[in-house]
Length: 290
Image (cartoon, rainbow, N blue to C red; front, side, top):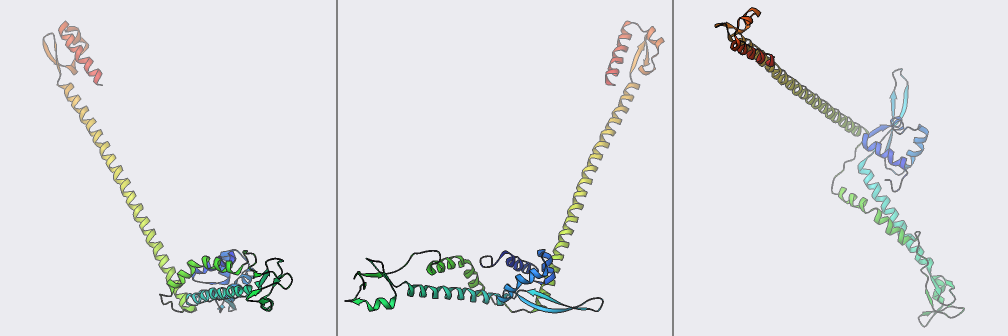
């Protein structure tokens, strides 16, 4: 498509390939151009039968009727159109090759005078073409090879179209039915429904994934809370054990056993040296623990 048409033509065909069938104002909106400019471009595609146009009557809410043009591609026809265009281009270049060969004729190898094919036939002597001025031998006038040479153009064209021809041969293996406006419209609606269904499925999957991520975060937080509560519980139990240990420690006061937690200043004064050392040792351990 882009080999033989302007960029705007290719864009119009790309839009129709995507949306299958569209009104002229819809295509104009997609291409950001005025109706007048679009109509000028689309004439080429309609004349070349690359797309099909039909006029439809649209009734507005106020009862007014408008004529609108709708465009779509008939794939069964466009395949034959492409084949025919390649055939016409090939036949044109073949004819140009024949015409060029006729015009080339002959030229003198000595004075370089040029002769047409019919002129050279009159100068044939002993099966040799001779110049009528210097009697030099005539040779074929092949001319200069350039990009305008039909041989070269035909070779370039066939190389460029190799992939297109290959695809056309592949399409010939399949039966492509002809479709009208209503069938294309039904196909577009089916495509839009499939696309909508696909979007809903993707949205549903996103919701499921988001819910799973929330559950994972909740489970992680729950695990952290359990771990934190367990540490608090351990701390509380350790504190209780420390209280229990403190309440079960006894020291001697002047030979009499007494709970460490109940020792008073008066008891400290009554202790002998060994008892006070024992008391002070317990006192330091508890301060270090706290």
